[in-house]
Amino acid sequence: MTISLNLESFEQISALAAKLPTIDKDAADAARARQSELTKPPGALGRLEELAIFMAGWQCTERPKIETAQALVFAGNHGVCAQGVNPFPQEVTAQMVLNFQSGGAAINQLCAMSGAELSVIALDLDRPTADFTERAAMTELECLDAMQRGAKAVDANADVLVLGEMGIGNSTVAAALSHAAFKGQAIDWVGAGTGTSSEGMAHKAAVVARSVEMHQDAQGLAQLAALGGREQAALCGAILAARMARIPVLLDGFICTAAAAPLFTSNPAFLDHCLIGHSSREPGHRKLCEVMGKEPILFLDMALGEGSGAALALSILRGALACHNGMATFAEAGVNDS
Image (tube, rainbow, N blue to C red; front, side):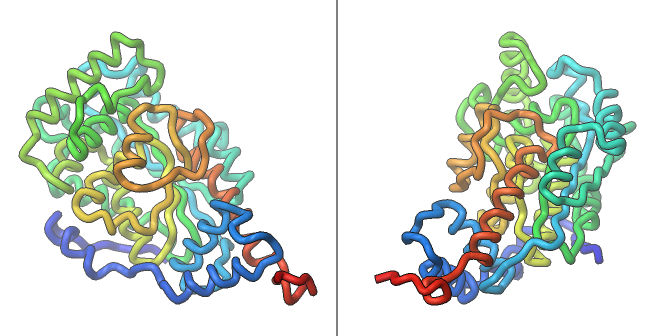
């Protein structure tokens, strides 16, 4: 079963925040109480305990499960590539989509290992967004259309959603979205991406600074249209659709987190059901996680994208639930806990 947002304006999305489901505190408290009864010292499983309680709250049950894990990778092309911000041609985006579809990429192997059903959605690769150094990357209607496409890709019956992306030039897009949302200097948000040199990074920073200044009147979701891409908009749509269905979300690294920045600045509560799968090597990602108040699950010096870090984190999430549901309580094991 798919989900449709049926949204007609950014204002309507902003108003949606007050109507979305929130975490079930009773279920979370019940899961927390169960953790205190399991055969281990209090807090001995660390983050695994927090993850189990998080899942319980969003699934509204003391014993959360992952029977269906969905992974979505959205791909898009960007007009800003005309500014020479990436060493690879945009044709690589379509080539990598074919690689995903034939099972040859890292995300294919990691989804198979972690038990996630992978779908790859290419978003008009023959029609890049506009060059945002000249005008807004998308109109509001174009942005909303991409969000709808992202929302419709979500399986309403999934127990958890893994999100990833692919798009030549989208590290520049991520830097621009981050800089627009959280200020600082443009260079603070710029990284090597797919292997850009130090000179190339300085050029990217100049492009980002100039573009963000040009679109400084755009706020919240309007920043997504001004500086984002179709895959970033689709990611936001998928995040909202998952929230409507109470599906916890595992965001990948820098690109995915930056894509969600316009949602966060509109209302931080939009991302309450989201976890960050891993801390990317991209320097701007840790800054994003800090300002959003989210601690990544994994720290593996990865910077691949594709949803690879989120897919790995899914295995950690499964481990957290295996311990939470499978361990004996002190009473069941006949162990004295006093």
